Length: 322
Image 1 (cartoon, rainbow, N blue to C red):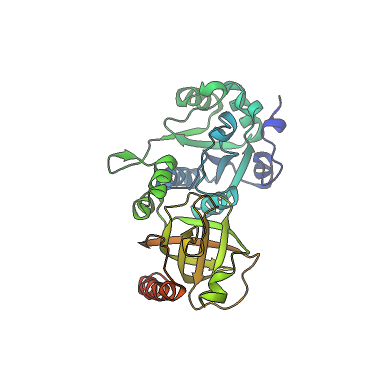
Image 2: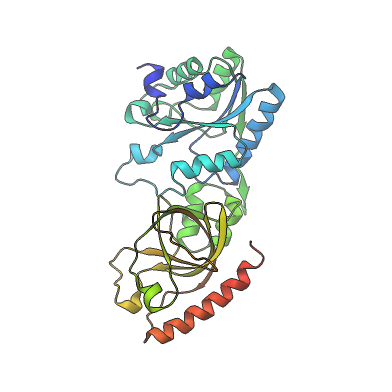
């Protein structure tokens, strides 16, 4: 297997492509970076600092699909962000470029020494590499930081092995954040992410009830990826083409209208002070505070009154957020 095969990318920018367009040495931060949480940012900040010291370009090297989805296809992780969202967050973390490697079974079978040789072949002007101190790579995870340090000494690039970030006596990790969000602990998740948890997706056709019967039109947001919190009503902020609006968000199955729990859960967002057609448009939804559980109301009038109460609370929440 050659480097072109394992570092190729059918979409997005390949590592060779990034190296070819840069007129500076590269400082690589390597990882999956799902969610680009504060633990990841600790590593990214260190690589960016090293890049400044060495007059190099800070570049993130990530893998897609998620390695666990390939190695354990019967139990793939539910990702916090899709690839596009991950790349956007890496750019916000001041990575000059993001290179994407297709993670395949062939790639996973590459011996760690071969992986490093091929990496250097792709980036002959490699100035630095930053990884987590517990990072494993290559066939069966047999490569580690000690092997990488030996290679760095031989190839004369700087290595930064960054310890995991610990908050509240527990390591910050994507899996921990997923559990918090699924458990409805959005404020705790935000503390680890460094930003409000955000879902990205497109607006699709919904039930058509909110606008016609409740005078409260909603956008049915279909996320590309993401973990959903428990069913209920939330405050939120929806961003459309650079403009942000407060939103009343319902996650669930609309039980008042006879929807059953075995139906697909939906994300319905009523944008405050918005008018226009959102169908087919890409939006992002930053989830805010949990207001109440999803309920089955005795009448539409009762539901309308509750929605008005929800919207009033959300308007108060939004005041200091936009």
